[in-house]
Length: 252
Image (cartoon, rainbow, N blue to C red; front, side, top):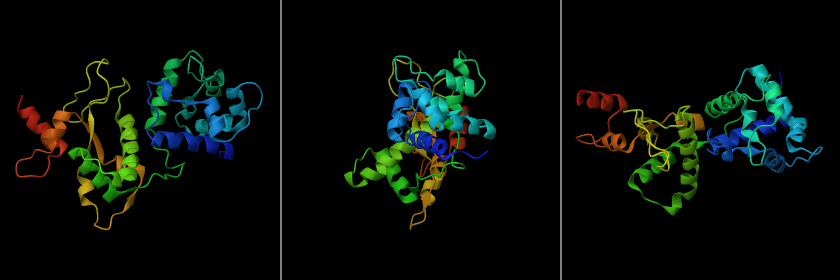
């Protein structure tokens, strides 16, 4: 099934926001509103309800296409902008799911954020490998260089996106070395950091452009303690994750 131009415009908008790291599965406040999508795509209000209007202008087409391709119902990232930020009844009916099945909606949102959409939407988030390496060094050292503002902005979006890909369904971001995660919601932030793994140091001197998907494969979540140990190898260099896991296991 071919996706209509209006449906593709909505898909591209949602994927661009995913790649920017906007959405968090457990926080509906980060989702798009029906009215917001109208504004961003310069769509007129058709009728009296924003949700029904958007359904006529590509959202319904997108839902049918997602079913035909057996893809996550990414349209659940568009919600009403009232007190209850939830999808309208049309979202559930389009996928033949009972309206009260909130768990299904949350599972679909989680899957949509993790999905690699580059097959259907052009990945315009190219990252220069040298710039990513420079960002890694400045991030570890805590340096802030205004010359690198644009680079750091792009890499910040990359970190946000990667964290949501690595996040478990329970909302926790876990260390890939020891499995630690933030123990209590009263502690703000994730605490677990993103480590740039070895391929970053193999960048050719001339640099090369890599896709968002490729750059995310160079990141891995680790707790602050394990992150420090990764960069504390005797004689210089850094541990790979498996080597550090073995050290921790033999130290028990």
